[in-house]
Amino acid sequence: MAGLLLSTPPGDVEQARADFERGAALYRAGDFRAALAAFEAAQARAPAPQALFNIARCQEQLGQLADAVDSYSAYLAAAPDAPDRAAVTARIEELRARLPLEASLRISVEPPSTVSVDGEPAGLSPVAVRLSPGVHRVRAAQEGYQPLEREVELAPGARIQLELSLVPLVPVAAGPERAPDAAVRDAVAPVPKSPPRRWTWVATGLAAASLGAGIAFGVSAHQAQDTLKDGTPRSPEQVQQVYDTAVARSNAANGFYAAAGIAGAAAIALFFLEPHLAAPPEAR
Image (cartoon, rainbow, N blue to C red):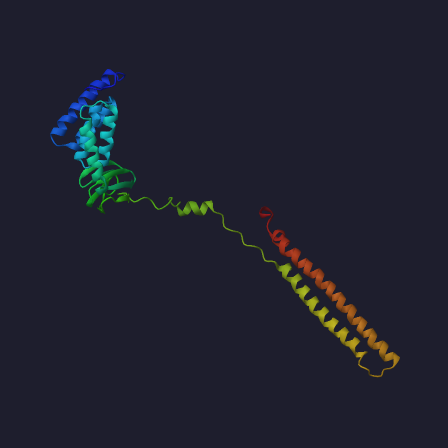
């Protein structure tokens, strides 16, 4: 193989030579995809312009016109004095003129899987292929998953992104395993019932009763005061009696108001304290 890099280890050169010769035989047999893989292996081990040229020829035969243009251009860059430079340049222009008619299909599969297009291996996803316009069949397969096939119709010059998701052969568990009932009963203690707030309700009742009595006496005191203003003639003794009654009822109302306030405050305090006071010592 002319053009091998001098810095390439001898072992790689010999393997590259074998890959190159294998690719040439496969190309003559019409197996262009296998030939492409062999020429690419040779180029990876020992870069050479002739390998790039043959890669471009295989890509052209496979319909990968854009890739063929790139490989032909790389060949000319690696061999600026190539005797067939004019012919290769013309071929590049011819292929570029046909490129708008090609469609591009990028295939992504979850999980990454082996992809084939129209029965021809395309590689491991994600993979991009250039195809002629029309209907193409894409197949994705991965061990442990159900194979998936899709038909894709490509228009001239189309750029399509196809995303596939494979279904596992064995359904994935919906969630973590549930613990046995016995273990759940042993692990979870019963919620203790709250003790009744008996004295809280007693204090609340006293507060309500005192407030009602205070309101009643307060209204009665105001009525007694209004009696002195109704214009009815009264003796000084009668006026004094009505006045004393109004004062007594007013004092009683104030007393009941104070009792209602004390009982209400006690009810509020008992509401928070009574459950703890009534609970057993180990629960406090």
